[in-house]
Image 1 (spheres, helix red, strand yellow):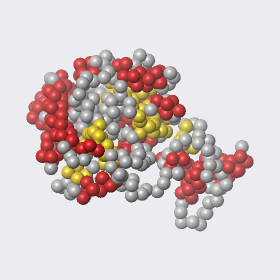
Image 2 (spheres, rainbow, N blue to C red):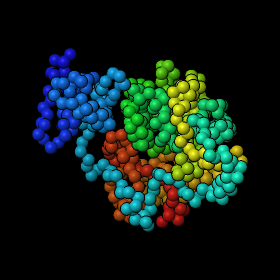
Image 3 (cartoon, rainbow, N blue to C red):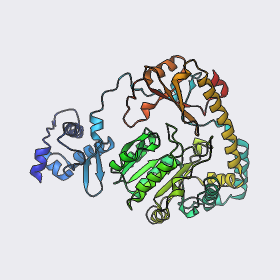
Image 4 (tube, rainbow, N blue to C red):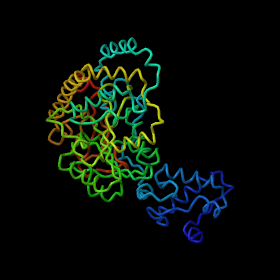
Length: 467
């Protein structure tokens, strides 16, 4: 076995170089992946074997392996070892950035205050029901003085979970028990918990293009993530089948950033996939489902699933305020039991004060009334934006997608230019937009004569939209 590794990994390290040994080892392994010496899913030598062969410490090898795992060249299988990630060749063969690939936008603090920013982050904070929230907060301070000083159950307050269950039944037709609901500090935190519950040794599939931070969170928790392409109905099923994933993170109600709503036939196919193997799961992020402007909401994957393989996820960040940091997941009964056995030592990450206040907000019907106001406001803004686009001199070359729900539109522009050309032209007009290619796992060119721009309008006033 040792001879085999020596043949495969002929690596020369220079102890006199100012570059640390672990970085030299990282560069050498990347080169072996690039030239095909190391194949996808091939196991690397153990830390002990490689450290003995190279005459370096095990810490050096461990540091290099962990660095390459973070960079997604490798993935780790606990108690087994490190393997070449099947997607590593995408990294080593990705061309250097060119002018046609959108560059990251500067931080918000460096953007001119008078810029018109079609941002997809955040909501209109003027819509937040400050007076109602303040009144309920005072009631909580008066009625729950002693309770506010005690810790809360790991799943979250029982009263809040009951209120969420009642909301899901009324709004989404979901029959869930409060004992299946886990409350946490937003979907980012909850994704990390789900990786711990399901296991980081699995392969996770994610939509491409899609929610970039979600992929980062999964990878930072040690999971191997493969980006699966989208078609007109959602996640491409053939590519999902070939991905080797046992968990898929999907947004069927309103996919970000394309605005696609997954039709029932595709949902059925996706459920067939997840129920074909006993260890498969779907993480259903019901993103923007509350902000549906057209037609009736389709049933959730959770409601349609008969095999208890769907984990439902949602957040109050899009409907109330991002800073509230309250999200929740609905675990299938068997996973709820596993959570109680494995992870109930975690304290609930949402303060009791916010939980009690949100409970009253839900129980008193304030949330439903707030949603109705929000939908009316945002539907009007969307209508104004669409009217502006359709009255544009180049309207015959514009295709608007994603009108059914959510707080952003996908604008397809049929012109002989790239997204970056459009972004630069908008920037010169003091308008900030984002191109679709930047939402791919590996930024890519779109077909010739077709450029796609994302227009988020939640934080813009009607006056700004018509400027």
